Each structure stands twice: as structure tokens, then as C-alpha cells.
Length: 234
Ligand SMILES: NC(=O)c1ccc[n+]([C@@H]2O[C@H](COP(=O)([O-])OP(=O)(O)OC[C@H]3O[C@@H](n4cnc5c(N)ncnc54)[C@H](OP(=O)(O)O)[C@@H]3O)[C@@H](O)[C@H]2O)c1
Image 1 (spheres, rainbow, N blue to C red):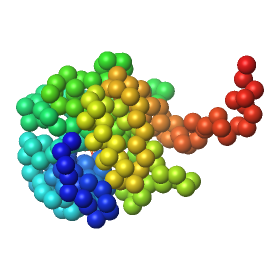
Image 2: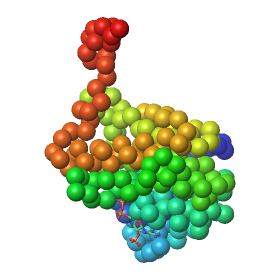
Image 3: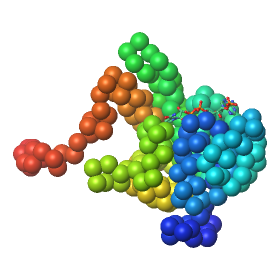
Image 4: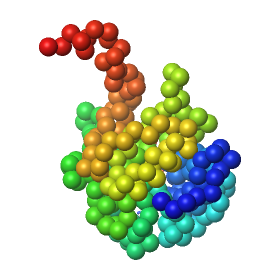
């Protein structure tokens, strides 16, 4: 990471390029603008990029290459199957930057949403890393619905939203953690990029729970909420 100016909220001001102009570009981009970061929105349709940039108050807009060239970090807010292909096309520009992958490889299945990747080393994040080998890559922001990022301060039951992420370089991990903190959330490191398939699968599982009318946030209670249960184990 390079040294940064300090924003009004005390956080470092980071330069972020966003590739894509849809829901996640708008929601995450808006959160980053609120945190004081310098955001440029890029799309294959530059009119759409201009509209999204104006909506969130971004510093600028342009094509995909221009947005990528702006960012110390570059968000791929694209369909999962398009992200590795675009990363390969832009690999020379992405070199030395942190690519943020929020994609969820998901399609409707007979029993609810299903993973469209094979998991393991076939995660979208791993394919992005292979396509842009000189970039750092972090998997993050895919677990929550886009609406969560529009909240001024995502906190629930008194606790800041925990944002799990994994990354393939210390720089990408540090940048992602700092970015999450600047959004008023709590970074939750899940290790290296080999863990990305777990985050992708977790996102698909969560969507399936919501679609079936369940409440995904009630699925992972801490053992500490069952006094004695842990101590009673042999
Ligand atoms: N929406 C959510 O709540 C949510 C939550 C977590 C994760 N995600 C993940 O975030 C990613 C983006 O989702 P979204 O909801 O923001 O989708 P979206 O609203 O449909 O926006 C997708 C964007 O990708 C662009 N795009 C599509 N194919 C492209 C290509 N080949 N090259 C360049 N740009 C391309 C589209 O541009 P055009 O307008 O020109 O087609 C559009 O700007 C997906 O992988 C999704 O799984 C979404």
C-alpha cells in the first residue's frame, strides 16, 4: 500500500476503480464515497457509468480501462462468468493493484440456487488471480445483499457487520481490511485465496436460506451462547 491522505472520518483516502455500473457498483461505490474515498466508475457503456457515478457522487467515470487505471483497488462488480475474462483483458492495467472480487457464481437449480463453479481451485477468485497474475486479489463483499451496503453504518444487534474476506497477498489483505474498516464494518480475515471457494459457496447457501424464507444470520450462533455446552465436551 502507498501512503494516503486522511479523510474527514480519520480513515485513509483510497483510490478505487469500479468495473460495472449495476447494483453492487452503486451500493459499494456509494459506501466508499461516503467513507471519503476517490471512486471512479467504469462501464462498457460509458453513459451508464456516468449515471451511476452521478448517483453516488463519484469522483469520475469512464470506460473499464480508465476506471481500472484509477484504482489502487479495482472492484469487479460483474457477472461471475465475465469477471475472469475481463481480468485477463485488463491484466496489464491491473498489475500491482488489488482486485476486489464480490462475484457469486450462482444459478437457479431444482432445489434452490446452486454454485456454477466447481469450487476448490475453480473459484471465481482463483480464476481472476490466474488471469491477472501480477495483481493482488481479494474475495469480499459477496455474502450480503447489495441493500446492506446502502446503510450509513451497517451494524446489527449492537455489533458492526463482520465482513469475511480472503486474499492472495499481504498487501491485498491489508488494503481490504482497511477498506472494510473505513465503511464502519469489522474485517474478518479468512486466510488465503484457497478459501475463496468457501466464501462463494457460503454466499449461495445464504441466498438459498433467504429465498426459502429463512434467516441466514441465525444460522451461525456462537457456542458461547450455550453456557456449559463447550465445557461439557469430553
Ligand atoms: N446484487 C446483489 O445483491 C449482490 C450481492 C452479492 C454479490 N453480488 C455479485 O456481484 C456481481 C454484480 O452483481 P450486480 O447485482 O451488481 O449485477 P448487475 O446489477 O446486473 O450489474 C452487472 C454489471 O456488469 C456489467 N457487465 C456484464 N457483463 C459484462 C462484461 N462482459 N464486460 C463488462 N461489463 C459487464 C453490466 O453492464 P451492462 O449494463 O453493460 O450489461 C452491469 O454494469 C455479481 O457477480 C453478483 O453475483 C451481487
